[in-house]
Length: 192
Image 1 (cartoon, rainbow, N blue to C red):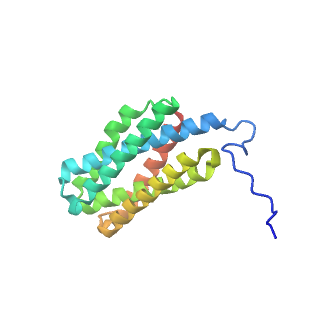
Image 2: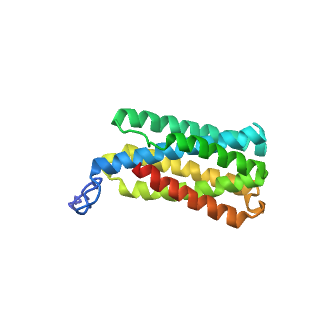
Image 3: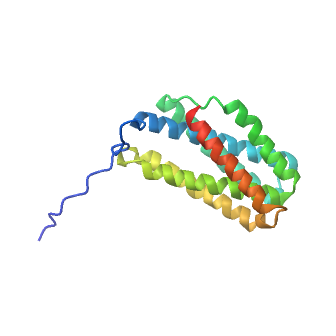
């Protein structure tokens, strides 16, 4: 007996869009732009933390996370070129703001630096999951990249927690503020 059940139709990115929604091309450009900006900002946060705490901070964990963010950024650098998508016009601002956030959290101590990591990576993990759900089978490679990077961001969050982030001074208000700032950075980088 053969299985004659119809095969599911592949999901196409943007096929469920409504009038006024972004086109498929606009959606992909927005995804690439904001992810590039986010990885650039994350790289700068870790550079700020390492400038204050040193390369052996948190047992070298910050250096390892910085290396992952650098690899993510290189991937999105390449994708922007391949797809002819412009980066966000806010890159100079993220250059300064990312480093400042990293350095400021590090001046408060290793646990505060890790609390910053937990807050940022939690928002990014959610952001990547939302993006992956938007992408259809026609964008399977991009979806896999986003899912892979999202899993690595989740690992960074867990690393922060393992390094006692929750014991940082003013953990709750600090992480709430960093999360709000990260969500605002996402919104702005998608659009500008």
